Image 1 (cartoon, rainbow, N blue to C red):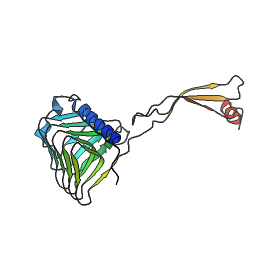
Image 2 (tube, rainbow, N blue to C red):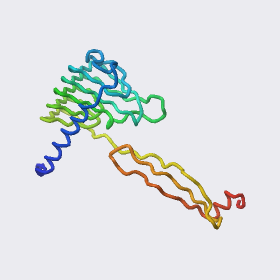
Image 3 (cartoon, rainbow, N blue to C red):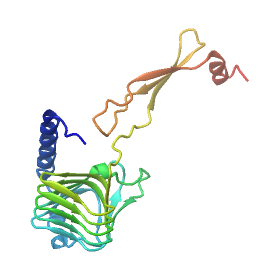
Length: 220
């Protein structure tokens, strides 16, 4: 394939470095999320928050991220991130009724390198200072942004996760027009929570006269 224009490369590098710096600068949620389990995090269930390790992190068995589509998970790792063979990151709903965590809201900020074991599966956006090595059959749902290189073993895959979700419009008011033959429903502005899109703006719906008559009790 043809290389991208220099201007696009410059923008991509700038965006990567900015995202990495932003993630690294987030404050740790609490003492409980600092150096959790000494970095040996296999078998752990995480809730939303910022987790920080002064060393590396090792995933020797499946880990679970429990939350909803609105929850954000940030993992700040000063060393390397090592995911063992066949381990998985599992996304589960927290019972709030708002779905499961989104991969686009899971950030792995790694100052060393990342190694994804054979047939292992990760969820989230990996921002790594050096390189990411994905072994044979491994997979990531999200993105991998490395400042030096990404190497893929046989059948290793990276699937870009979706990152846009619209809220349903919310009814703001309902008034009859002066003529009495129309009912005007208004809806409040509902921004998205993904991708900095503008979302659904204020709007109105005018019902047909026959429908209005039915609502007033004069129709069938």
